[in-house]
Picture (cartoon, rainbow, N blue to C red):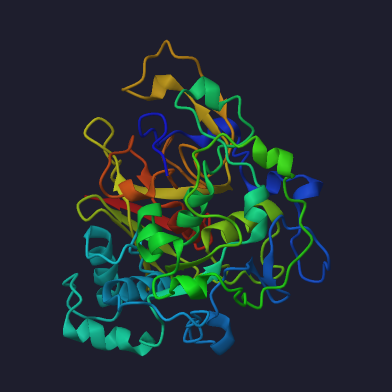
Length: 419
């Protein structure tokens, strides 16, 4: 993912009238409900009872996440214990950030979240007690093999310019390449995907096997008004390493089931599918953002920790505003009112701009508006920078974590920013 507008990441969407909210959708972008046979969702769905995309996990087959063990007959070439822990933690709501098979800050935070939720000592280490507890999900492999949907080649991928005025001319700040889209779908990076697919083949698959047709998942296609070949030809983004129809190995993320009828906007349903985020999320009564720990903790009504994500929180010039705040609304796929006067590192002579929505926009796919003017909790176009870069005072998460959190909170959720 790219960094936009010199890491700009905080601006009140109230200036946009919260126009990114689902209740502003038009009649052509409504009910993705069950029973609408033949409905065009803009992508190939997994099945009639699951509106995730065709690369979805098989968690729902067993009901306990143990069904997500499909490798399309291609066992992985090596064990990946850290990645296996990451995909389990991600399913459980303790986000490891970018899934890369390495111990790092975000994975340690995720482990602390799991440990705290289970009344363990919060070491942030994959110690024996934690390994034993995670052993409940040991049947879930670190990776799985999927087939990239054929309609992904017909979509248009556009390079996103650095200048705000040029961005404002675009209809959408979408993915620049199929590779970028694929990486975000599986909560990882293009570099990790290349490592899992040496020479363009799933690790563990030899060249002769790769040349043979392979069975795809049980995904059931739905009618799709995909972009035409001529539209694809207009793509201006960088050339991708991967291609539609290709079989590849990916991090085995799950929890991606989209329940029919759960989403009242096909645009937002499409976004959740593209991020590998499901609709079954816990209700959160309180959110606590810790500046020192660089984390966001989510608690249910019984004060049980149900989720933890690594976040970016402010900077020296725009520190996190400590205190108690309220959520005033949630904007999904929001536009962005770019006002240079609110940024210390941008000249006030720069013109204001209204930027279109999209995963590569300054606030990503979600803006959770707070009672503190000009502040919110939101996504990012650069997931690999979470917890490492600075923000303009807001709380920034990966797009997939922001999308997940947006389904947990409401205007009754309490928000605390602490040192």
